Each structure stands twice: as C-alpha cells, then as structure tokens.
Image 1: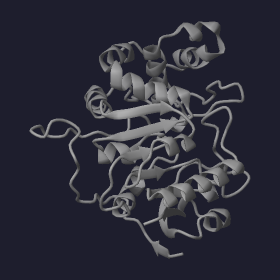
Image 2 (image 1 turned 45 degrees about the vertical axis):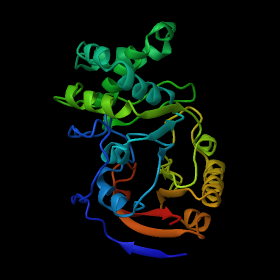
Image 3 (image 1 turned 135 degrees about the vertical axis):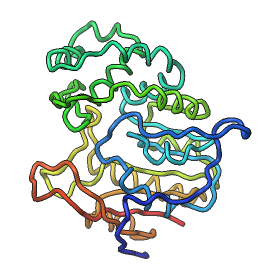
Image 4 (image 1 turned 45 degrees about the horizontal axis):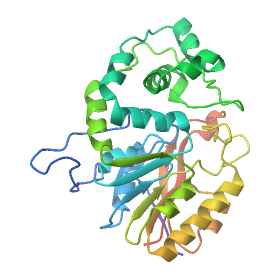
Length: 298
C-alpha cells in the first residue's frame, strides 16, 4: 500500500485536454454542476484531475451526486447513476426536456411561504400526478433555496430541509442547463445501485466512486440522501465491487473519509491523503480543514 500526504491547492485548475462531447469542429461549452451537493468535489478538483488515469475508455460514475468531476471532464461516452430517484429524474429531464424545464423554472417565487408549499407537496397525493419536468424543476428550486443546498429526506422519503433565507438565489441558469443537456446526450443515466456497473464495465474503462462517506463520529454521519441511507454494510459491499473491478482490469478512483475503517478496507490499493474543507458539522469545532483519502488501483 502506498500512502501519500499532500495538501491540495483547491483554487488551482489543472491544464488538460478534454475530448469534446459535440462535433469536433465545434468548441466545447463550459459545464458545471446543476445543483449544489453536500460533499461536492469542486474544491478537490485539482487533486482529482491530477490522480486521473492517463487514458481509459468509457467513464462511469455510480454516485453521481452533483457530478463535479463529470461536468469538468465532459466525457464523450459516460454512464452515471445514483439511488436518489429525484436526482436521476433531474438529469434525465435536463437531457431530454431542457427547454420545458427552463420554462417551468421561471414560475418559482422566493419566499418562505412558497418554499414550504413546494417542499411539502411530496406529502400529498397531488405530487404523484406531477410530471417529471415539474419534479425536476422543484428539485432545482429546493436545492437553490433550502439551507446550505442540502438534500435530506426522512424515513418516508419526504424532503425536510428548512428554508435558506437567501436574498437572491440563482434558480435558473439557462446557459448552463443547455450546455449540460448537450453533454448528457451521450450519457447513459440510470436509477440504480452502484453494483450495477459490474454488468456494464469492460476492461480499460474507468470508474470514479464518490459514495456517502464513512462518518468520522456518531454525530457526523450524513447519508440521508435516500430514505434507505447508506450503512457500513454498503461500505463493505463497495470495497467488494472495487475488488471485482480490479480483477476485470477496470481502473477506479474512490473518495472517502480518512478513517481507520477506510484505510483497512483499501489497504491493498494506493491511498493518497488530501486536505479538504468540511462545511457541514453540528459542532463548529469539527469544521475546517480535514484529511480525506483518494484510493486508486493504478
């Protein structure tokens, strides 16, 4: 096992060439995450890019979340998935119905009363009759106006994050939505468990895993992005998937917290420690710079 400790320069952008997702005679358009996401990787982008394999075939990201690395790389042939059904619906709508989504996003109001009405609609039978476009529009609206851009649901799968009290949240970013839609045209999008990639990957492909992190303490766990959560058994299952990928000749890079468990689970692989800013913690003393790990099999 190789372990390296290095401080990330989170502001620096790596120089690289990116395969265009549209015709070669057109310039690629900048894309960035459509939604804010707890644990998003934009601050670690320099480290992620520096630790990417030099070459690979198809790109896979089975915990897509906000998709910071995906939108930075703009892969020409990709597979993204997540167990968060609302999130996957959003990406599918952006790909297939971006103009209708833009139109629907224009209707939203910025007030606590309106926010609570939209937030609590998933407690009613009416929500079952909403179109995928309406649900995607609601997802973006709540993400931009709720506290810290968190996505959290209760055991019934009901969104329960409070109003964020932002003065001028940017709910509609039309240019980015159109650019993201263009990128997603060549992307397979699935509501699926991360292990489903084993049916898709081939030798020479690359997988980036950004799962819910192993908690640093009992109070720091944040895995309620689906009603079923993500427990320790799933962390072991994820390690087993990585082992299988390794035997198949598939390259993988994985992010996780720097805990004893994670270091033991992946002791047979290359482990690099990087510094990241921790934004969400009930205890103010637990915020700030902490170490995370990047695990890779190449």
